[in-house]
Amino acid sequence: MRSFNELSITEATDNWKNQIKSEVERQTKEYILKVDENEYLKYLQNRYALEPLVIDLSTENIGEPVKKRESRESRFHDERYVVDVYYFTISYQFTGASDIFRLRPNPWSMTSYDINVNEHRGSVSFTFGIDKQDAGEFNRQKEQAKSAAFANLNNANTNINAWNNQLSGIIEPIFRQRKASLLKENEFFAAINLKVNDDTNSLFSVPVIQRKILPQPNVDKKKVFSASPSIAQETYEHLLELLNGVGRGMERKPSLYKGKDENGIRDVFLSQLELRYDGVTATGETFNSGGKTDIILKYAPDGSNLFVAECKFWTGASGFQATITQLFDRYLTWRDSKVAVMMFVKGNDFTSVLNNIRTEARLHPYYVRTNGQHGETSFSYIFRLKQDAEKEVQMEVMAFHFDKI
Image 1 (tube, one colour):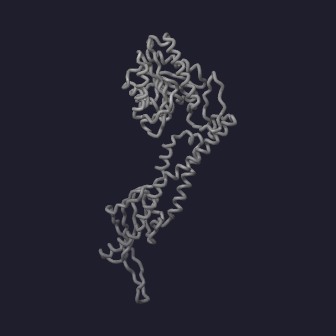
Image 2 (cartoon, rainbow, N blue to C red):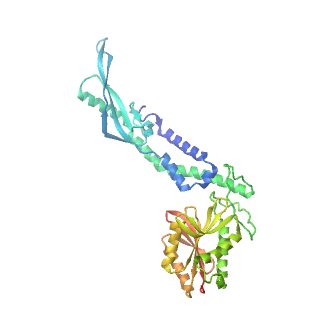
Image 3 (cartoon, rainbow, N blue to C red):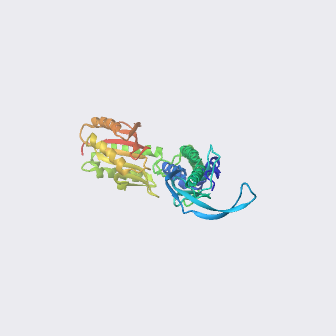
């Protein structure tokens, strides 16, 4: 190829943008809606970023010369003569994207040379000939060829660095536009109550949790859809209301909790969850991520987590902090977004415990902000995941006074 003279940088970047768009468009609807957005964007950026070229001149290798007898024309007489010409191939090792050798950068020095790129070996070479057995002439010809071959290397790398720097701004709009289009389509289908065949790859509908007692609410046209089954905010609020109602009922009827350990009290809450909701399974002591958590509400068809809760007796501020850490570090996955910590309080210092909860929750390293409360003993917070500071999780801390345990 002619070094740095095959394809303009403008044509190349246009081609790469089209490739990115085509790759995103080829993905199925289900994949685009289900995939971890940050991971997919990072994958695309790694795939289409180019490593700048570095030619290691210290690895110069002079190949065995090839001698050819060639006819030459005399400068002063209309005569021809035969001379021995020695052709030398000079090669260097390189790192980086070999495609850059083909790019005509902007700006471009009007200098080029025939080169051969061996991507497998990571080497680039050029060939020149001399008709004298003269070391000085050899070095002059070699340096001229090398200078011409690599004259545009720095300009090409500058263009590639600019491409890499703007890549995120190119990829994200392409992905988000496609995802937004698919979500809008789901929104439309949900608004008209269209039933979609689960076996088809063309559509992916979000499962809906139906509560047995209350009528199913109308579909909100402005609802944001997610391809990962997740509990709707309205359902989450009803769920918290139910758990708080069960806990307050147990406070009034000590026989429901008296003599029970954490698991026994937890089972009372579990029984109410199973009675209240269709299309879900409520389980206790279930493995999730790195350990067993006390309550998990799962979407029955595919086992996706909808709600995770941890139940503990209050043992003090340090124990409360440890419970939150355990919940987030061991039990939650990236897709868990709605959780609860249920504290069972013995003794007569309940008001002091509530004050401690308000203080200690804000001191936890995963705390983001306070998000209101549901009554006097149920506090709402936004926390973050340990492994992803941008991933927010709604956490409810519910306290129940079981003083006669």
